[in-house]
Image: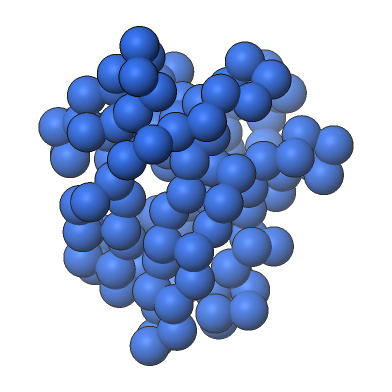
Length: 124
């Protein structure tokens, strides 16, 4: 899968399916420094991914400080040719000025045994 280098960050896309609705999400950053993947909750509300009282709330600590997100089990996630089914995924807020819709972290990268080819800007 081809990735784009935008402002020093590796950007890609991910596809999610929830309750029969499917969406491709662009401007997702590959972040080997993130333990968990997280997608902007604003990007998935149109497929019915909302916070509900039975969702786990977690605190994420990063360069922007501490931020809350919620965890929801997603029916299907497709990334770089791999399909993950019924997996927990984090959803939270990303400031619009960042112009990113999420992060692919080590949870997905290790599970899929992906290799990042920086010479050719590919993930396989």
